[in-house]
Amino acid sequence: MTAKSFQNASAGRNRRIILWRHGQTAWNVERRFQGTTDIELTEAGREQARRAARLLASLGPDAIIASDLRRAVDTAGELAALTGLGVTHDEGLRETYAGEWQGLTHEEIIERYPEQYAAWKRGEAVRRGGGELETEVADRAAPVVLRHADKLPDGGVLVVASHGGTLRTTIGRLLGLEAHHWEGLGGLSNCCWSVLGEGARGWRLLEHNAGSLPQPVLGDDA
Image (spheres, helix red, strand yellow):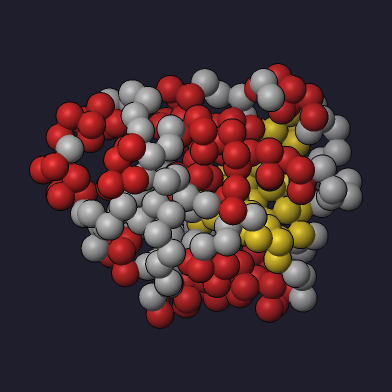
């Protein structure tokens, strides 16, 4: 689907999408690349999710969807417990698959894959560790988000619990930005979120990396 058709599909109903990153994991703290590896939240991550859920519940969400990886499942579960809403899990919302990079620290990646890492940091389209391109992640994740947003009532709120890299690429796609501009959005800190709202010409970014005072971004999208 083109950027224009994404925008046209969303026009006129004043809905909002809350794109919420999962809580902290041990691999975040260790600066170890997670990708699709199924890592649990730390106790600090669970507390982050509980705190964020209290704030997000006040927005009156109508629906919650989440990645099927445990760190996103457990994060979304905190909001579900407060709101009474069910959670729809979808593997299309998983983090970027990063092949041989997964499980390595950033320092180990730089040592073993220096050219690939440098190209990624320059913003080039890179299959990190032989994995997915960012555009491929957007291709699978953005339609999931739009499909559920289309089910919302006028003025409705959808919460999407997912992963930093996946959410950034999805935001870029829904805003109609070219892929080489997605890096300009920056990363999401653990359990922080971005808000997209509908305008006359499509989705607009209303808030980015909200939820706390500024915190360092720990994780694959740092």
